[in-house]
Image 1 (cartoon, rainbow, N blue to C red):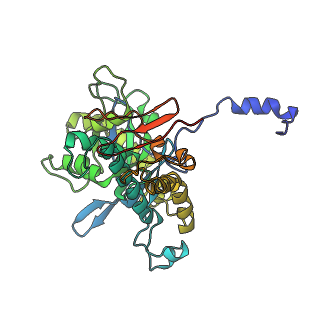
Image 2: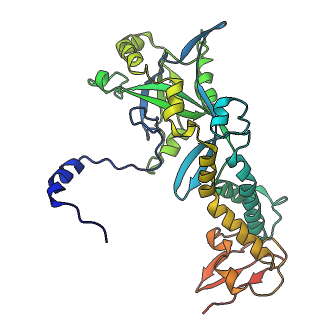
Image 3: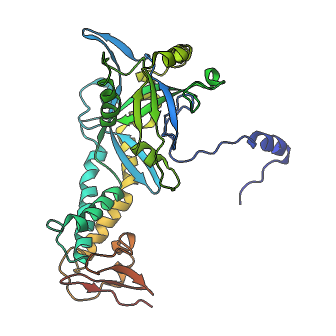
Length: 370
């Protein structure tokens, strides 16, 4: 039985909990003073990119980015990211963290793809098609869904940089409280997105700069919702990123840009590596533990598929017999594909405790269980 709280503490507990903020989702940074920029839903924002990380080079100047290779993972309904450590070895810092050039997340990808192929072959067989030769309109939706279901993804290159959001009205001018309400963020994007959205926008300028820092931007996340509830995903997909070049507008924002430079001084590349969870270097043994958690269900499903295949259940020619009772409850088909309707009328469903899988040209039947 839980211990009863001392009643003498109750008033203080009540008062101290009135302004409680509950953490939703997976933490993106380990320090709330250095937040991560998230997509505004159906909203436009004025953004200034400070010169905090600008460095002078032999060719002029450039803006330093924190570059990292990231694995994206799904654990239940939560998404998290792990820094890939493949190829990192050979200096005392890597040695101290146990790095030897291998990456536990990269190593686990063979199991992820194994399950993907098993599911694809199973669903294709239920539709009576070959996944290698089936028409795109049949097999592509299945491939897309199975890719989204993968517990772990191959590493992608990301960049982290700094922005300052200046609260502005719909007319494009700073709000009355903008000077005190400006907010500094780290932005953590796929490198491809940074290049296609920001660097490409620079090329449209008459005297194209080599980096986006020191410029005022309008990031537009508004879009035609078609009457549906707006969401962050569609806001990001429809986003437009434009450099503000109007000299009168820039003149209005100059005091805010100067203040932004002061606010962003501590948002360095080093700080981005320290506090942004996706960028953090973990000890290899801790990465192994995280990957084991992420991969637990994938490994179970692979094992179950192989067990069913041994009696002709999934991905093999059916043997015409019954699936043993011991394998019924472990049937991986219980975990995906329910209610899938094929182009040729085949379907997978569960009715009154009876699971029947139709396939062409062969299949198997699970009898009712008492």
